[in-house]
Image 1 (cartoon, rainbow, N blue to C red):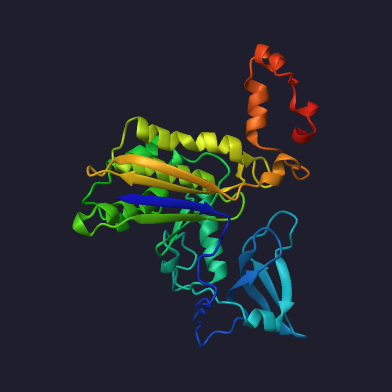
Image 2: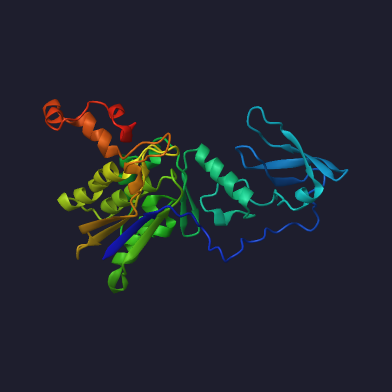
Length: 323
């Protein structure tokens, strides 16, 4: 059996040749009517908010009150009537505002409702959310309990061959559990793939680590081969990761991780193939960014006798490529 994981700087949740579903709207309610609650697009950090119409159309404009706003931002706004009329209405009869585990379960699937659900979950450190078979991971930029090694081990203990992976909560563990289950099921098992994609700083590198750790836990794999597969990422990060304006540990390359399983359904071997390394960074890192970690590690950890023998300076600031 085999499970492959790929990481690349791509972000598409739905095929571009398909239009998103058009949200339904009650025939008896107008988005511009006083008292209507709508999903309103805003230019501040909230992006989309729930707003209530407090004054109907006057001179082609509608006045609304947001449910909340960042400090310094007016909570009441005016928008053109045509813009408000095109907004999706928040239905009180459906769980639109709930922090759903699966976005498919929202009563009205629209961009505003989706982002609001993600925001509610992130506020509670629930960084994993399903959209059907797709797992969306929000980078909290800090440690969270759901990703701790102890939590991952506990989840693995509760996951057996008879466990229906579809009943598991949204998590990287659950996604690879489904892949592992499909790979080992009787004579019908087939090789599986997990694609991890997103923009710079989205958390691809850490998610790959979670997936590989979960596979080792679920398959009860131990030994030097498993340890090498899990720890090889640290070596790759040293040579292929760098600090950027978006991320202090940004992978400047793509990688294909292939784990092979023996007849006992445990990890027997692994291959990690890197590609598209940003070689230009070695001689010209962009302003405000750094070169690859390995150069700084080398200067920081090298014993003084060896540094003197190689005629190296003490500080990265002494090198134009590392400033």
